[in-house]
Image 1 (cartoon, rainbow, N blue to C red):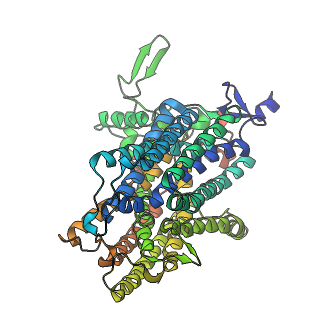
Image 2: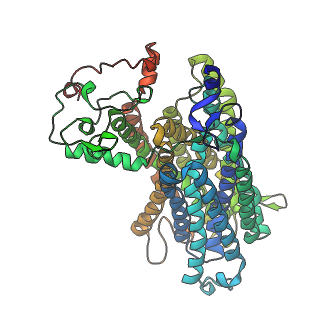
Image 3: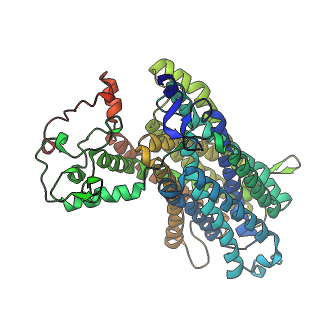
Length: 591
């Protein structure tokens, strides 16, 4: 019997609901099938986002700042909906069904976008000889475009928060071999989605500019349909984790219970607080956010009688472990808040940096590089950084420090520094470009005699920064959250991307209002050759520097929470003995 138990995964089941057989489920093959969905999602999202600003300006005839905000709002909504996707996966659908359903919605959205860019009735007529002959897209045309984009946003939000969590479900954290495989999964996860992004910014952008956008978007739709079939083919090979109920409801239960008992005192040991969680799943009591501990004080009326006996009302009494789970989520928030500015900088790489590229010399022999394809340097930087980190830094760090590479907080810090340097480099490059534009006169249509390769440093620095910060954030939010809240925690991480894009839109609007004039001039002028985009980049560099100092304070404050089983393991005590734990002195003394 004991040998049989070693072949099963304790907290996972197979397709039929039986304990998952380690030899027949999970591992790298099912994880790879899940990665196919993420590759195609990135192919679609990046293929649309990096070149959308040129379509909005050149075909829909919208102003520069408006076009940039449409792109960032689209991406911001995509990642904001990840939080909703995580809630649905944890509470109702499960990760498998969530991925399948929302992948289909994204395929539908890309198909609709292909149709909207194909039909001439859904775009304004081409411009005449003068700028005054350009007619902006009307409300109906913009509305159809929005419907397509936000169908894609719903699909992205629904599936993205579940893909990484469902991938890690295929590895058993309690098995040393599979735990080591899961550590490498995070790097390989991001490497594969970067491959999808690389294909998007090269092949798809070229097809959009030279063959037709409808063909490129149609390929995105078809590729997602194929990915869904590949994903479904592994249905019987996956490991499934049982839903532990709605994490949001659990959080509110703790808050409500603590609020009801706000006038009660904590003049006793933590060991006397209510706890009904199995011994090996308990989380040690901590002394932060002591107000929440009041949710675990046993008071009159907390238990309700039923046919099965007395049971606690979860809105009046919560276990110590449930309270500590909420504390774990709260501890993530300071780091969460200080990573938003990175994604604000990132937003400039697919909006204003692409617009910069469209004004510069992009010839490579007889080949004209599409402006949107300049983000290839961004993606290549990500892939090089990941490869160097995986093959060089991690092995050397393990030999030197005995640890497999940088910690998640260290990776986030490196990413923040590199993005700030990227914005400084962007400001210097834009100053050089503006000087060339001024020297060549007021022509708004001629290509400036300055190589587009001057933009490489800003793309490379922010791209390398993303390689560090994305894997660091993903690791931090998944490993730092309770077991039953991992999908929601992934959604919380992805909201940093969302808010970064929304902050970008907000900053653009504020800067446009403060520095702009009636004739369309200012830092973010309708014609960037007459603007001061370098000042905007400089502003982001200053904000990034301030944010990094705040991040260091938050990172120093953060302390990870240990489970009871891990603590007992360190002391050499079996978690199955059921021995009572002395939590120590009075809570009031420690709080």
